[in-house]
Amino acid sequence: MIQSNSCFRVGVVGAGQIVKDFHLASLHAIPWVRIDWICDIVPGRAAEVAAAHGIPRYYASIESCPMVDMVVITTPVGVRKAVLDFALDRGWNAFCEKPFARNATEHREMIDSARHRGVRLGAGYMRRQYHSTRTLELLLRNEWLGPIQRLIAADCDRIRKTGRAEWYMANPALSGGGFLQEMGSHLTDQMFTIVRAKNFSLTGCAQVKLHEIDYRTAATGFIITKTDASIPFSFLLSRLEQMYTGIWVECERGSVAIELSPESDVVISQDGERFVLPCPFTPIDAVTRAYREEIELFAGAIQRNETDFTDADTGLLASSFIDECSQTHIGMVTI
Ligand SMILES: NC(=O)c1ccc[n+]([C@@H]2O[C@H](COP(=O)([O-])OP(=O)(O)OC[C@H]3O[C@@H](n4cnc5c(N)ncnc54)[C@H](O)[C@@H]3O)[C@@H](O)[C@H]2O)c1
Image 1 (tube, rainbow, N blue to C red):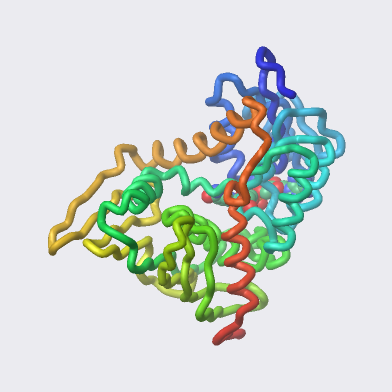
Image 2: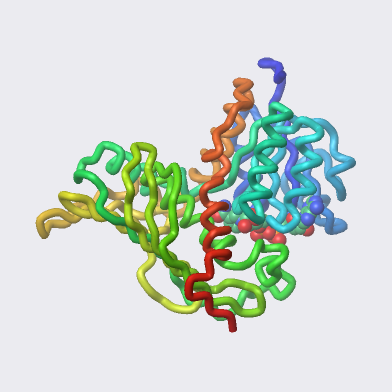
């Protein structure tokens, strides 16, 4: 139990890019949170980040890290499970960067283990906090354009180089298989969040893989919502071509679309007219707010001793979707 008058202690595992760019600033911005330590297996990395960000302690192995109320785990998904297992054994609530797990089986094991120990888990699907995602979810939940008829979700950009030869993204074991996990898990979770999905089924799926890394996933199927509506969907995640990027939802009385950038507007089309609900934040504010809000929501729940969490809090449906896409192989293309 966390004492209400004590400071809320956080440990950070992984001193990489996402931590330096966003998580440390988000944590520092929450007045009642104190970052106690940072840990990274690469010698010197945690020390360097600790010095630059005023963190009192640093470690090279999680086994050496002292007690905290919560850990933020940002190791690549391929080396997540052992770290999380250790954190759960210590009874630490854990907020994990996306993608949450390498597959749905591992994902469920992590959830079961956390529930068994009475600790809370969360996943860093920060697009849930975007103004566009929230607005679209609200529009659809209230059926302002009538029931949903179909949904298209796509994230397409042609990759020319990774820029970091040793990067986890170039390693299928570390990245969890490639771009569907790395980038597509965001799009998948966002699509499911917007329509408040409880399940899905695939009617088709094709992947393009090169050296065990998926570069393109095209899938079709149905999303089942919490109100038992069945919505036909098309999904495309590609790093091979430039195509439509965004989420487009057709409803009975019009359609609504968002882009995938943090500062995206929401665009409604009805009877040949176009209405724009603008994002009130600058691009940098939009992205920093999203990172801060996801951490603050998670830490706030723990501070209130709310250790119960739903499967959706961890993005289980996204892990199941990624699994099924890579196992279904309807029209699989391997180069
Ligand atoms: N939410 C987002 O939009 C977003 C954006 C970028 C990255 N990410 C996710 O964040 C995670 C990390 O991405 P990154 O770009 O910061 O990667 P990174 O490679 O820059 O950093 C990962 C760090 O983890 C460390 N590490 C690996 N194994 C460890 C262990 N056992 N114990 C302690 N440290 C260990 C590495 O040494 C490295 O410093 C990935 O899962 C990625 O998908 C999310």
